[in-house]
Image 1 (cartoon, helix red, strand yellow):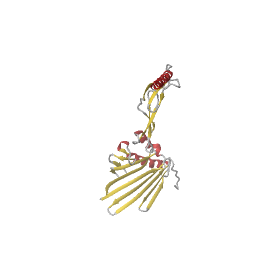
Image 2 (cartoon, one colour; image 1 turned 60 degrees about the horizontal axis):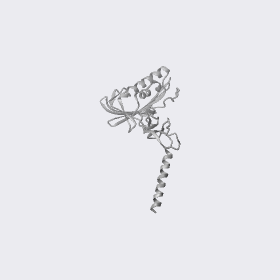
Image 3 (cartoon, rainbow, N blue to C red; image 1 turned 180 degrees about the vertical axis):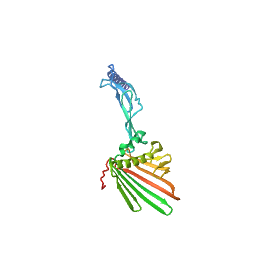
Image 4 (cartoon, rainbow, N blue to C red; image 1 turned 135 degrees about the horizontal axis):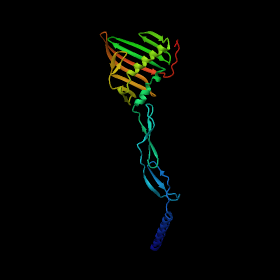
Length: 256
């Protein structure tokens, strides 16, 4: 029995040696092309039956490049590339606010050639609340205005192109005067921009410290502010919501 086991073990060893010699009987020639997976790269033996590899190492990632820009509506994508084998990996990039370039683009004069502006103002004083609504619609060559307060409305259509352009210029200048890039900080929780200083409200001749801006798809869509002023001896608390909409789609005629 012992002799049988000895012979059997010897045969097994000889078989293992034969397999080893068979697998290594050739001199490996490695491909010049990189083989790779998510974590590493290597040069594979060109013999399909051989599993030998050379130069295996972890990827060496570059600093990455933004391949999809983050917006308020969706995360962006940053792509990293291995400097050795060109393998890539990606990671999401959260939106942290508009760049100064994108901010300036949102306030370009061309953006305001055609748009609608609505402002709802609530003024509170002792024992009285006054609500007022201002509506403006602009096209490239025309303008329309409507003011509603205490149940009474008044509207006006710009009589000519020059008058329309003057009204538009005044409105755009007013918007720009309170929306300087450096005066706001992006709040990711509310997706709004909050003023980091007092903002002058030219129409009221006062400053508001509580001002927020909201953008959608790279355009300003809302301004909110609140302030207190004294007028003719009365303490007034004013809140305002400005809505900007219909960019590029407003159509006007004398009958509106």
